[in-house]
Every structure is written in C-alpha cells, then in structure tokens.
Length: 453
Ligand code: SF4
Image 1 (cartoon, rainbow, N blue to C red):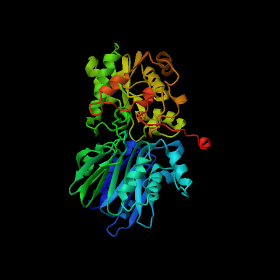
Image 2 (image 1 turned 45 degrees about the horizontal axis):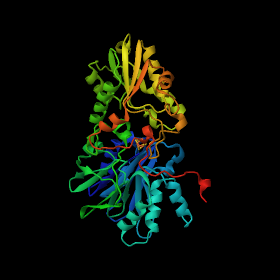
Image 3 (image 1 turned 30 degrees about the horizontal axis):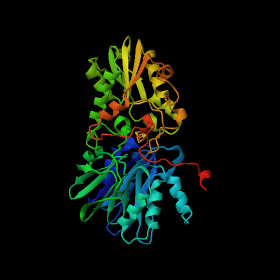
C-alpha cells in the first residue's frame, strides 16, 4: 500500500492524482483521494482497480481544495473489497476527517476487542478505522494529544496520513518499518510513502519522517512530535529488495544503489561460471547489473516484460498469479539460445514464478539456468503488511537449499546472506529481515479470537 498527502497547494487532488500514479506499484486493487474544500467541506472518491480506472470520469474535478490525502491498496485476501479501500472518511460532531494507511498492525484484533467492548461498531477492516476510533475515544481537547495516545496503543509497521479541514498529520511507526518522507512544493508540502512521487508533482525532497514521528502540516508550517520515547530504526528490507521503485530514496539510501550493491555481494557469495546474466524484470534488473559488474559476465536482456500486466506478487489468488507469469514475461530467444544463464531475481516467495521462468528459459534454448537471489531464503510470514502468505506456501519454509533448487528446476541456486542484505543498505544499519530470519522487531500477538478470555 502507498499513501500520499498534499498540503497548501491549489487543486491539491489533481496534483496528488499524478503523484499517486508513481505509487501504483505499491497497490493495484484500488485507490482513492479525500480533500477538504475552502469552506471546510469534505469530499472523497475511491474505487477498485488501477487509478486511471478509478478516476476515469472526471471525479478529480469533484475533489476541490488545497489539502488532500490519497492511497493505493494492494489485494489482501482478508481485507478485500471497496469498503477497505482508503482513504476512510469519518463524520464527527467536531469535524469530518479522513485517514489513509500503509502497513499492518500486529495488535489490531486486541484493539478491535477493546473498542467493541466500549460500543464501537466497525464499517471496515482497516487500521485507519481503528486509529480513528482510538483518536475519538480519547477526550482531550488537543487533537495531537489524542493522536499520540492512540498511536501508543498501536504496535506494528505502519504509516498513517490524517486529513482534517485545516491540517494534515503524517505518522510513522516507532520501529521505522514503513517508509514515509516529506517534500516541499512551493509554499506547500507533500508527504509520500516513497520519494519517487515527488518528481512528477514538482516537489523537492526535504527529509524522511523519523521512526515514531508525527509531522503536522498546517498554516504554521511543519511541526514535529515524537509519539513514543522508545523508537528503533528497523526499515523493511523488502522495500529495498522488491517493493519500492528504484528511483526512490528511503532513509538516505537509493533503492537502485541498494540493489546493485546487493547484486555485487551476491556474486561474491555465490559465484558461478556462465555466459550471460539475465535479470527478472523489473525489480531485479539493478541486482543483475551489480552481479554482472562484479563478475564480468555480460548483462543481457534475456527476458522482456509485457507492460500493463500487474505484478504477480500482489495479485490476490494463486490461480491468477500463475496465469499472470505467462502474460507478463517472454524470453528473448536469440539472446538465451545456447547460453549458460545466471538468472538474478530479487526474492523467491512461493517459487511458482521461478519454476515457470526457469522452464521458459530452457524451452527457449538455454543450456544451463543458475538462479541467484539477491536476498536470503524467505521462511517466515510478514506481519507488517507485506503479503508473503502463510509459511506453508513459502518455498523455503520447509525446504533445504538443494530441495528448493530442485523445486524450481534450476541447475544451481544461491541466496544472499542476511549480513550482506543488511550491509548493502547505506541508510539503515539494522533493517527488518524477519521474513528471512524470524526475528521480528515488534511484539507479536496471539491472533486467535477464541483465545480472548
Ligand atoms: S518481515 Fe520482511 S517483508 Fe515484513 S517488514 Fe520485515 S523485512 Fe519487510
């Protein structure tokens, strides 16, 4: 998921719409935008599908005002449907407000129980709604105090943007798992999950939101509060490895530079003799370039990605994912025929995509296919909003390296170590790698509702 906010700019929604397109890779199930007009009236439009489908009929023209928030949502089996597409808009006697979020709380069930016992009835399954109710359960006159109290009840990896008629609040979890950054746009500001949204909006990168920070944007400029004295910096390694766009800088580290460095380290840790290096488009191309540069094996475009087909990883059903691979990639026959190939990919989740690509390259005439993965073996579920599915579905949760290699049909298989995954990152000394190591940066909670009493 991705969030974006614009404060203090004419036609904020229209500008935000363009910026949100640059976050489309973070979610394709749906998206929406909420705004407040000059009279303090709230507006919101959201829908299922890609942004150009959601806003196909001029809906942006009905979202006036100088401040707006928006988001894109990726498919999540347990939280699907239009109701769960943000921003979520709330009516309240003290004034309407809207919330959009990225990430996932690990104690959402406990918070929902707490609120339901106090009379709350939920309209959605979103963390945004939990935050909204917690804010309004706190009776302090000062809204920032209520937000601080609410965030202190929340555990997990998240970012929130909150829109009121006069200001925008942007909040990042105290572990710094989810990315969030601020840009300047004329006299106004932009907040985004990734800095790649800034260019198209004409915004200039200012800084990252700090772990545990609440940034308030209003006519007084930028103000900052830390909601917790406890904070860590455990940025999600998968953002660098797979999720984020290569032109984004996250916590002082460019994503392309990270991947290239990971590719270089991957060759040093898992060398192999081959004729060409081929990257799986598109998130693996930077790592493949790094592998090629370090090894001296020429980089070739052995696979072509068809545009306009969604990312296989974030489609909701396995059947759709498998169909999607064939629609998405084609081998370049004249390049791969008769070659020993090093196939560099960013990660393997279930292994079904890798199996199909290896098979595709062999059918196209490759004599050997050696798979090199620019991240460690994924063995554990992510609890922070990256849909890595259940442990049983993960290729490596119950297989040795040799078994995993056989399962994807490769001649050899090699993974980057957790140490090199960490050391490839120039901006975060200790990123979260829990899906590889099982060491989660937050507390985890029992999610079984029958264990409540
Ligand atoms: S568990 Fe993996 S995907 Fe989830 S936040 Fe940590 S590194 Fe990212």
